[in-house]
Amino acid sequence: MANKRITALKTNRSVYLYFKENLGIIVAFIVLFGFLSVNPITTKAFLTSQNMFNVLRQISTNMYLACAMTMVIILGGIDLSVGSIIALSGCVAAACVARHGMPIPAALITGVLVGMLFGMINGFIIAKTTIPAFIVTLATMDIARGFAYVYTGGSPVRVVSKAWQFIGAGYIGIFPVPVLIMIVVVIVTGLLMNNTRLGRHIYAVGGNVQAATFSGISVTSVKFWVYTYSGLMAGIAGVVLSSRMYSGQPTAGNGAEMDAIAAVVVGGTSMAGGAGKIGGTIIGALIIGFLNNGLNLMNVNSFWQYVVKGVVILLAVFLDFIRTTKK
Image 1 (cartoon, rainbow, N blue to C red):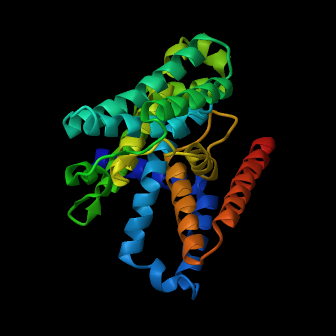
Image 2: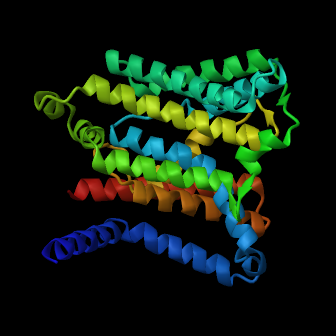
């Protein structure tokens, strides 16, 4: 009985701390959701189950990236290559089926492994040298995008198959497969960050690299595995997106890294490193997703949507700056 009471108290405290740390973005999400629910222009279409599942499907690929990007930014780094890795992974997976006759499961795994390989390259260079992560991933962003164009000749690689479509546009019961994958990714990332040695080391390295080194943490290993995980998530996003579009597109994922960073920053993760939670990133991704969906339902020009999204990101970074300077 005593053990159950202690467990319940710990759970209640965790829930309390979660809401306390993320109160601002939770309120922002509720306000946004409420506005779109009562707005005469959006209310009829917005609250339908079809639209809710549509939003979740749309944000799923961003959530894969954002989960890994949370770890990268807490580490004090950045990964600009994920959008290009999406394109390359999707093109490779599609070409494995359309051009080389591979079984679909093997092709999907190959595409994911290509993404993971690029993540490992990023991690190895960043961990073993003093070259800033911004420069390394900027370079691999161009390399991966270039390979995608070279490999496909600049044209989409089409796969006309119902089996191919399943992972990106199929359903299990009433739930879209990409949404179920998203739930698994969120749970795995949460466990990695909160219940493993790697997770604790990520916070330590992001908070103070020198102190982490003196305490016996292998900074090199931590950086390598975090960027490898980022590449893995980009690979998953690539094959899911490729499956949904029935083709590998060398232009896919353009700007995806910005949406992922936006979700992480809006979710309260500090760009200075050492602070952030996956729970905040989930809310941040939902805010970005519902914001895009609401703007589309209100027929806001797509050019203005970039402006609105940029303002939201700038505001989130500014609030993070204020919070950091007050400490």
